Image (cartoon, rainbow, N blue to C red; front, side, top):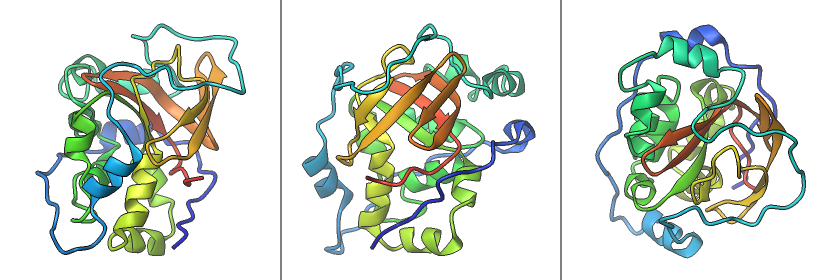
Length: 230
């Protein structure tokens, strides 16, 4: 079944950064009913890495980069101001795994549910993302809210489609702002094109709200659109 995500979304409102609550990851909840399993899919499409892999980069070159420790994007200053301390702060996120960090960021509640088996009990990527180093292009809640309601309903029961979408947002290796530009091959097997300079970056048709956020085992880029696997 083809799952179609909207190709453009309005920029995420700054006020949403300070109003949304912290999401919590659930425990693993896989089933054993003979349907498509996440473990089988992941084993066929990816090999976790323990260091940045130097994923082949081609195409667009950038003319400016930021220090790896300094997140970039038009929404970063407001995010930092709204979360100066506590689990959601940039400093504390650096001490959390990717999945823990997703649960701590107030505007990643839907992604956290999708990754941890709450959206679809047959799809749980928590253990996978905790085992290795990854770069995650993380759609914020407004991005998921912009999808047609029938798309979300389909993802709740179509394990293969949800796994495809989630793994299309993940690239093996820890790619900071200094090395993320270009064509990156995702865990799903397709590619994404990352372009930009300074504070303005895009991933395919999605805008980076705040990117280069360091976690214990990878880097997260908050984006305003759910990417469509290619």
